Image (cartoon, rainbow, N blue to C red; front, top):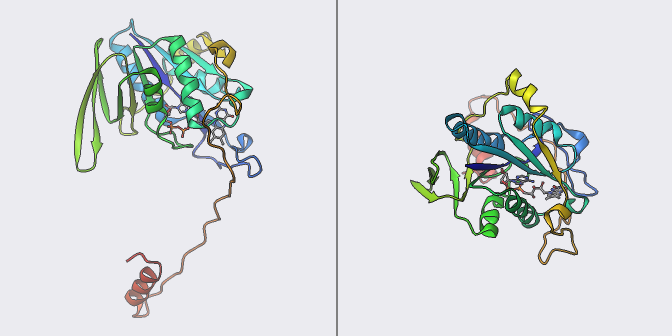
Length: 259
Ligand SMILES: Cc1cc2nc3c(=O)[nH]c(=O)nc-3n(C[C@H](O)[C@H](O)[C@H](O)COP(=O)(O)OP(=O)(O)OC[C@H]3O[C@@H](n4cnc5c(N)ncnc54)[C@H](O)[C@@H]3O)c2cc1C
């Protein structure tokens, strides 16, 4: 069984995240790049299967800028067998359609019985890349699973919908996305960190995948037209109870259309 985990690198949510207001792109110097936590959870699900089935192979796939080796080594130190980074100057400013096309091409080259992804990244939060990848590869999608069970033939799990719970199942190969309610990711141990230094980490360009990207190659494409920084938070009004606090509170909620 070969499981490929789609893992994105994102700016650390604990640090200051900034957009470059001129290019509309992430200011990479403003925050530490880390593997997205949801990708770590997807990896954890793959590693739990591998713990019980040592013959299984777990590959991490990332599309991103060149400074990803620290993130990829962390995922390798958790227990992935190998990693592939797709990196190319033509990928600057990629939208979700292009990202899915590139990931699908890389997945075809790697070959996978099961593809595990996060349901939504913590920075872009588009929430559609796994579905697009499934569509491009002609595979079933089990979206937003909160737990999953993998067997050599099947993947199954449960997802929440409004007012209920769905139990889903698909034969392999399939694409699965998981939510943050699924498996807590393990911490790399010393042995894992040492082993990770020697594990294969390949970098592929678009030429290696035999595809093109960028404005000329895209038949459809969304572009960022402007970027505006979120205004700084202002402190709200303080209500001192002089006997009219309840009234003041109701006035405040009413004037802000909260009730
Ligand atoms: C303005 C802008 C500039 C960008 N510049 C670049 C750039 O220079 N270089 C570049 O490589 N990309 C670039 N991107 C692409 C971007 O980083 C995302 O990968 C892409 O837009 C997916 O969006 P999302 O995170 O909202 O996807 P979602 O659908 O929210 O992601 C869901 C899941 O899909 C998987 N996934 C998503 N993206 C990736 C990925 N990149 N690699 C592996 N798995 C993934 C993960 O499992 C993730 O949890 C840019 C995007 C924008 C909007």
